[in-house]
Length: 490
Image 1 (cartoon, rainbow, N blue to C red):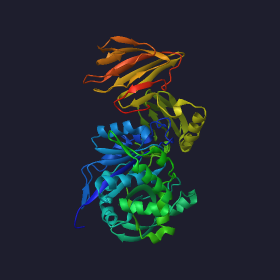
Image 2: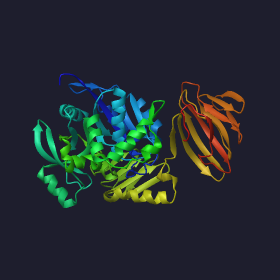
Image 3: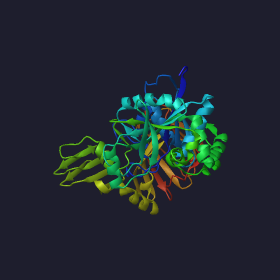
Image 4: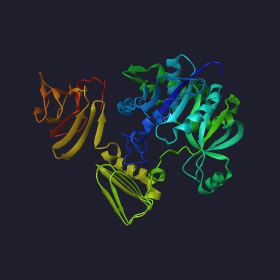
């Protein structure tokens, strides 16, 4: 390559999986969790390319992230915390990965005025060896620049029925092969055969290709996706650091994955498009899609009896058991092959080999309108978070933490009054026509129906205890007048 080519990393972060419930929930999915170390899966994905640029590439100044609008503030906060510059395109509703990548391609082309190479990464996978991944990216980059679709296949470590596979074709250079076919999850006998043959790789869901190549492919294979995504993008609006696409148009886009929408066609009936599909094998990179509690147990460091733990756990006479304790000590006595996941408002106990059926538990909770299916007790907001400590008839107690310089909206409630007690920091309180400061151990009362706002003017976190009382205590009892984050909800 005689001149450098723009490489735009793309993170797809819109998923809302339930297979890791009760830790992962509808409003706080697994990519936002720290499951393997101190950083979240989203942060690990973004940091995988830190201080790296392939030969011949000009790395974009920011990550391009496609996320569900419901997660926008926590996604932005996590990337900022990791020191990663980002541009976040918001999906108003979930439509799977093919429409998400189409939005990313349109955004990357529009903001660069060029035809960048996109490096497309799911936000909810673990890949422990960043060096191995970077070397694979270097191998893939020239082929992607030349117009090929390049994917990254994981060298199988076992016969696995839970993943899709890639069938290897002819070798096209050092570390680069044709993809003969994208194939679906096999049964156990087929998985064993494929594993032993050495001709198949796990489909890692990571791709590298030009923006124009994706748009050409989606136009040929799924024209309705492109039509509605282009309409949604044409109606996009800037919202702080976010790009909001038009909701009505995007909602009409068919929901489909990258593999189903395009990749299976490019290695099948649509070969006539002239788009080559290549794969770079990733061996020993420590990859997992963490699709179940059993998968997390397989990744974990274990004691001599095969037990793994996050948080406080004691094992006595127990084997091959995983404990994830968020808030309390968990003691396991004479148990085998279990998963125990403890959170402040829910506990899961399951056999490790059937823990993937947790989705059935979540479905039942949703059918019963149980809040534990969708949200944690601790709720994140752009200004900080709140934790519902206690709830009873006509009262609720919350611990509220407000970041320095942040403010809640100017709001009013029809059905509840509030008492605020400052336990740390300084609060600026607006109550009706009054504005005043409260220090530690001071308190105030917000009557029902009175406009009010809570702000943190200080340089340390503000922590208050809020006691609500009234006939209805739901979060939808908020009339919002002003909000510095432009929220209409949440």
